[in-house]
Image (cartoon, rainbow, N blue to C red):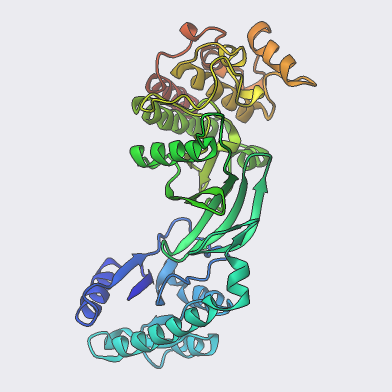
Length: 414
């Protein structure tokens, strides 16, 4: 028995666990986070659960709104509604909206809830068994040219010459995931570099297990392709946030959080080497998660995945030393952070040109651009982050995070 609970009262959560543990001692309970407060993404069908329980008081009394939306999704798991009383208006409407069962809270101590859940589980198991052998399910397991069992492909998100990104629902995790798929590419020695890159990304995320580092759930190989299952961020990345406009204090706060994530990465012995807004994913408006460590340099690995002297990354965000294929250290990532902060403050990149090599040239040879208007007082921290030589930047990401927070506090106090 695996249940998704949309119940914010911790006492009520505990009571549900006590009541159901008598019949299902090994039952798994996943409590839906209240943040963010929006409804679950429309593609989510809770197919990894036997049932979903929604409390009338969920999200400050919005339980009925959630029930109506979720129960109306074709293929969604059976949904039970916890009502304050059996004859209340909410209970009557819940039945009309398609609740599999309406459970009065005063009856949690009797056999009504276990009986309804047992029936819901039976129906969900039958529905999932029928679906797994259907043509629709066979099509849903395909991610481009690759068949990946255990996931339902929702849609393709993006793709390039190296990898494809898909939105999928994981039956095992019980949530939406992003699946990154890339063809296996072996070098002259027989090493599969695609798999090695994915393995490095997976290992870094697991080794850190940091709130501001993307969570990677599974690494695998299917049909001569490597795939990586990662958490899904419906709020998108920092590019979207920049397009919407960011206040100077929010820009500084977000930069400090990026620096915190970099500090954890650097302390674990890795450099990001491809830090840019597209690799900064948003948890709501004010929390971030770093992603895409395929170009990271991890000293814990014996093999260097990229060739010595090779220029890689994104020119707009490269440090001068990285753009010229020179040795880099943690301060190179801080330069990239400075570019991101400048872009958040101005809406523009510090250096632009018609071709990548011209941009790389400007990073090393042109003066640091000046901030204007209300953000002009922030020039000193931009100058430090974008110093042309590493010695002119902050000594560490930890120092950068502290400095960014001090500046943010002074802006708020002004």
